[in-house]
Length: 215
Image (tube, rainbow, N blue to C red):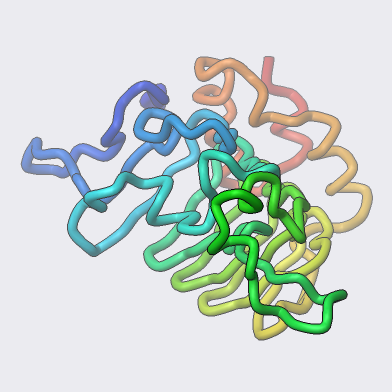
């Protein structure tokens, strides 16, 4: 049976059995236009709350301002559950001064350029962020990572790890080292939508050899 080819241009990619769109799920690249966010095709977010009045960028990354120096980069085919938030570097306060109070923020003559932390937050491809996960400033999440519900992610998470807790720690690896290396080399998330559709049976079966054979 042929597999449906996904379309990243659709704001709402899920059509329910009764023919209506599931408005709580969105292709983020189709609904976000933010100068400090880079979001790959087919990455979606689902939320049970009403549509955000200020847009999906403000809901997911409330501290990522248009004038921030940092970036939030999210790869392709990621899945973002209800309540996930990215706490950008602009939310951090100065730790090297005698006070953490941001006096400059309240002074329009000194506010420009105030950025005690400018680290980018990077999320790889095919990452699942579970319900209510919190991604802290400067986190770097590898390809294929599972982030458990309610986890607080800091630092660097290796490719294809499963992490849970606060702070999020690796509980297991999803595949062997050789399989992870092969998956990263294949980088199926960069394939055309048509080739990905042909690869779905291998992807769903967890068969790296079968994925490698897809033309």
